Image (tube, rainbow, N blue to C red):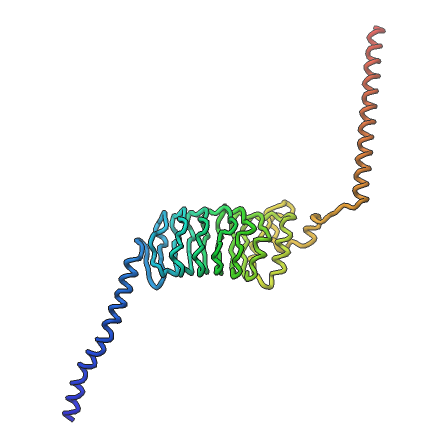
Length: 300
């Protein structure tokens, strides 16, 4: 028994020493990884697990030199007004870009040329006035775009979302849109959710194609129909957008036949003759009055 006990106590230090030999390189490698990540992390930002969080730091410009393996970048709740061209060139692994609640009015052309894996883009609560053609060019992997709460947003170019076949969620709510081209949405076959409420929609004849498209897609695409209301014309002000029927746009399809044109021409001709006759009679009456007045003066 004594020999067995001596053997156990004699082997324990060897086992501990062997484990330490294996663990030490691993711990050193991990320390180097964390040290490198901290070294590349921009000032005022926190970096961990491929995520860079620079939100709420009152930044006026985007931070330079992010870790090259950044997948999630949050620049939300700052005062950023512009993004330099080519800012995302080195970050091919980027999946999520959060730019909400800044002062952005536009994005530089070609910003997403290398952002092939970008899936989620948040541009809400900014100062965008229009979404230009090819604004998201080359970001073909986008699944969600949030452009809500841009009160100055008045126009969306028909080619704004071209090439975004994988886009599932599009939020255009609470902006200044009065019209949205159907062409801007027809190229989005994967669209599942469309938010358009809180805009001052003008529900005239130009709205009919969009409304028909939305109704046909209602089984495949959900929309915030309760929040989408008409702001004009006056006869439908405040009416829910989806309460409008084909009868609402009946006046948009009125066409004139040949008989209608002939009747209008006849009425115009009659009105012209009547006008000429009236002017002739007024002229004769004025002339007679003038002669009568002159004759009365001569007699006196």
